[in-house]
Amino acid sequence: MVEVINVPHTVSGARLKSRRALQADVILRWSLRVTALSMLAVLGYFFVRLAITAEPALSHFGILGFIFTNNWDVAHNIFGAWPLVVGTLITSIVALVLGVPVAIAAALYVTEFAPSRLRSTLALLLDLLAAVPSVVYGLWGVFILIPDLKPAEQWFSNTFSFLPFVGGQVSGPNYFIAGLILAIMIIPIVSAVSREVLATVPLQEKEGALALGATRWEMIRLAVLPRSRAGITSAAMLGLGRAIGETIAVTLVIGSSPVIGHQIFNQGYTLAAVIANEFGEATPGSLHISALIAAGLVLLVLTLVVNGIARGIIIRSDRRRGSIADKAVA
Image (cartoon, rainbow, N blue to C red):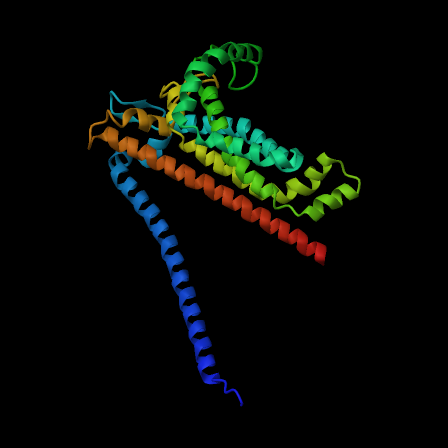
């Protein structure tokens, strides 16, 4: 007996499955597109609403006048955000200088030097720093760091008074303490991203460097870090964005003084801290509330600029690496 195979039915079933798969791809593509566009729309709406609410202050003082005027006087309705911008930049730079090297060193140790059985534990301990609430960091700074570090800060200020932005009497809350707290807070995110980037370096390149007689440090310097530079830069910029926007911890340890300090151990203010401190006391609809919203708008623009610079650095590094590879192939 000859078995009859229903070929048309099999072909039509395959076509149906293929059509369904194509429809699923189209649905997925459009869903992801709508989600991405929705995020951009929300960000745009958020920006527009901030701009509309901040318009009275910006029109009263002017955009440049609001940003670069060195006078934040609530009692006289004078709002110049330059001391807040300077405080934000100083504390963020201190956080980068102190925190990024530690985070990268920790990532290198976990990926290259730590025993295999301890790597996951060490990575978990580093990541747990991100789970600590910012108010805890702030209280730790108020009750532990400020009193314990003040003698060392005064010694440094007296000994190295010839350096720029150093010298004079040390305040309790100051730029340095705020930057130190921020440095500790950005270590988890910078270290986590750096670990992921370092783990992508091909094993063959590291083994090749060692086979050519390089030491472990030379292998890291010549094979690991050049390949990871763009990713580490991105991690540092993410940490900078985190430091710029931090509020509660900085509010507790910076001193809330709306003037530009003459040295790193003076009191100051940041954009986020002034919003947290004064928003509850501002009268709705007043020029004060508009100025605080304008400070938030400046903070948002500053964060976007930092992220844009980071993206530009990554693109430039990728292009340079591609051109080097093309020249090597040629």
